Image (cartoon, rainbow over all chains, first blue to last red; front, side, top):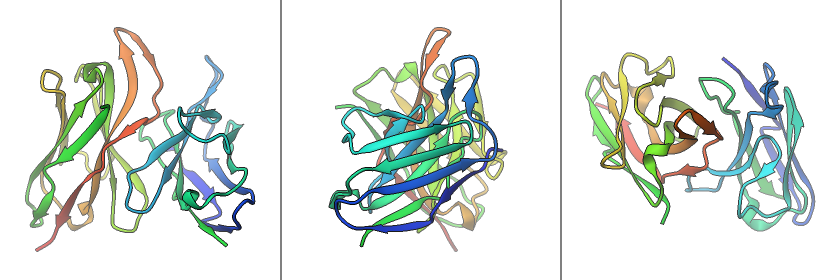
Length: 113
Length: 125
């Protein structure tokens, strides 16, 4: 199974500041035949279902604000929120859809400082 | 409106059974792989099972293999999860999620781009 490890487990950032969440995979999720990283990022606000933010490691889902960006390749990935807004308070998960079981990271709890 | 709506959760005793449903609307259900994902109280997300758009292929997490069965009725736009031999550790909010888009032999995506709001399963005596 592919293990995804996120860091940090929790993060407190001031409004308007940058937030960075990392996700490390136990094996590459880059599919060589199409050069795509099978890695997504999800936001889960309190009491809400998860919401897809980023897929293919760096493609923003429709309707997601452009302050959210994803980067990385192979085994190391990053989700960046460029200017934190109050509505960004949530738990963020990375997930690999490269192979089953389609594992998630343990989650990063993002709060306002 | 494009949406997924889960139902069928409830309180069940250890060893009991429950069948969850997920009603899809607003999109061509038969073109998508579908998944079940669960979240224990206060915990993270755990993928449970996946079914191909045509229902031919299914896979399961090791923790539920042999106890849970995923199925779908494309005529009714509905996904199911039959859960047998339930254990305390199966207590969770169960979400259905939309996965890969497939038309014929051509597939794209794989990420989970649409989620329901979940249905709560509580296993307790």
